[in-house]
Image (cartoon, rainbow, N blue to C red; front, side, top):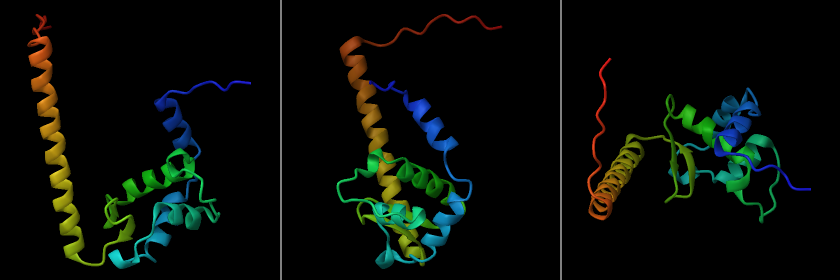
Length: 141
């Protein structure tokens, strides 16, 4: 039997709908035990601690609903708490000093600058290959 393929919007709606209501609180409680870069926690370990499960090593986190739910919770928590996530440092931690935060802000600025440069290159190449886009006449109502 073949399962119906879902759109990304359908998948994210399902993830959000099935997220436990207390997940952000559970994530925060775990993060408070991981203050400072030297005490960071990996995504895998965070899933295991928050959901109180043991993941087999072969499980791909990128396909795991629980991992996506935790990342969404962290994204929300980061608006209020200094929780740092770093792929370079492989993990998350609750910042315990200003220097860690400043370093991440600098890294984020560099990433944003690279993305803007990449978009500028794509725009330039698009015009070179297909020409400038003609602006459509629009009626003003």
